[in-house]
Every structure is written in C-alpha cells, then in structure tokens.
Image (cartoon, rainbow, N blue to C red; front, side, top):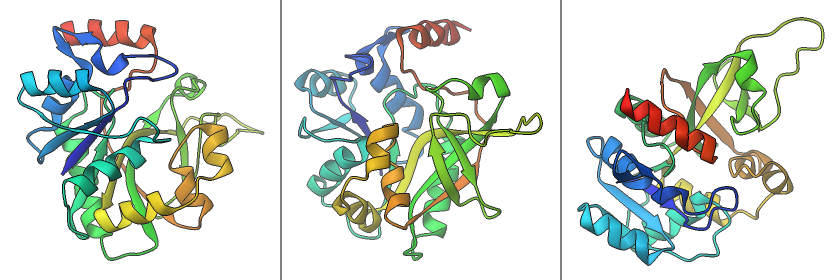
Length: 239
C-alpha cells in the first residue's frame, strides 16, 4: 500500500499540498502518479484534504495534527486501515507530483527483499546530483557504504571534499518502504536529537542502530518545498 502524508500546516510552505499544478492539487497529482503501482491512501490532518481527495475518488484517512514526522502520520493511517505485519507500506511524500512509477516500484522491490532482515528498518533511494545542486539545503544528501546502506543523511554538503573536487553527490528522495512491522518499530522509537537538528526523520533509525537500505534510481522528479519550486513545477508540468 502507498500512503501519502499530507500535513496542511507545513511551517516552510503552508497549504503546499493543495497548491495548484495544472488544475489539480499537488497531493492529488502525486496520488495519481503512483496509483498504478499499488492502492493509494492520503493520510492527512485536514478535512479540506479529505473532501478534495473524495472528489477525485482517492481514499483518505484523517490523522492527528500533532505528528512530528510524515512516517508517524502514515503509521496511524496504516493502523486504522488494519494492515498486517508483513504488508509493505510505501511512504510517498505529498510534494512529489512528478514521481515516476519505476522509482516507487524499485523501493517496493527493495522492501520485499529486506522484509525478513530485522536490521533494515527503512528502504529508500537516491539519485546522483551535481556539485551545485548539493549546495542546496532543501536537497537532502546521503552517503552510503559499499552495499548501499546509508551512513548518514544531511542537508549539508556531504561528503566534504577537503583536498580535491568531488562530483558524485547522492541526492536522497524522500520515499520510504517499510513492512508494517518495521513501521511500527520505527514509530515506537524515541525521537533522536539528530532528527530534530536536521529535521530529517530517517536519522531516527540510524541513531538507534538500525539500517536504512538505499537503491540508486534515475528520475526527473523533484520535491516542492518553496514557492519558487512550485513555480518550477508549474512550468515543468506545461512542458
């Protein structure tokens, strides 16, 4: 199941999940983009989002407004939906209206392959980005080991090229795969200081000794975190 967290009160860009892209609200366009992969549900704290989803025949679940992360929100929704421990849950951010189905399918496959590995709590993906792109704190960077297990995520430019030029930065896409059992484990962990400092929920898993498995993908998609990126999205949609 694909669950899309849609918090209406984003501190950086309020109401962004309802921003209009080609006549369709962003979160609805995101749901439409991934609907061919698996069943889709929007998890929200807004009756307005519930009503808009209904008009587009997309299922939505009301969740609490107090959640500290999107993953905590999808856990509440998954619990209400009565998922089984072995069910795969894919967390697709509501600000990814151009995400390709192939990317979500890769994460679904990675999640299945790690379903019995209790060390791997989360599954996600990255794409290679340019050196200038790596300077943008809105693009999260990840460094991995030789087996594509995440070592750290940061809004800062990592790794830091102290002695020479480096141009193989990995840009993290905020899409996560869990089994429902792993999702439950994640959401029962205490929030970690690094999670609060970077405002990156995946650091909770690393801080508590779990692994985040990664896979490289090719994508033209981009998240929308600012009004400027919304303008870019509107132009991209018209291409």
